Length: 274
Image (cartoon, rainbow, N blue to C red; front, side, top):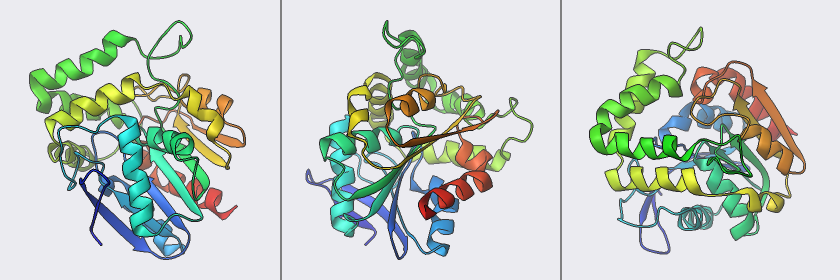
């Protein structure tokens, strides 16, 4: 079943590996489900069922002109769970933007069928700097993302992925091949989805969703994340989610699922094993 159709008729590409307790992997912006391949293979080899899908507008999924708000994106997640039969004993793991879908699913869909959650370098609970969120990212910096993409999408992402993976910032960054793959992956996405999702993750306040987490929650964040700084994200999420476990990767950048792949995969499997 490579595709499922959402309630509004959008085709969503799904990868479904292994069997056992389902672990649903939700990718970051502006990538696709393939960014989870190393973890998905390890999960399947360890006896789990790894389900990863391309968010609407990205990868091999359909590219409608609307539906990039978190309520609709989370309804897509609910439809993936239903159509794959993964509505029981599921773990939801969201990277970066994908953490927002996890948080909104816990509130909008009352966490139906979810037994554990993971927020990995996630935008949760609130990226935007406001009077009551002083550690957030200033609005003009978030707006500059959209302006940079509109002006020169391909040049913008060449620079963006260097920070994303800590190239020039950490001692052992990813290979140039990894950076090139990420740049290619964003080419699969539509311009409208890229811009609309950037607006969504930059402006959506997930703080009201935190009380809906009633399951064990793994939070992993790098202390040198320049894309989603840890104080307004990982640390704030851990403070607001009961029964959460925060694991800080000292010196890690945003793309830690690649830069610290072995450690993260081991931490995820250990968490699931509990």
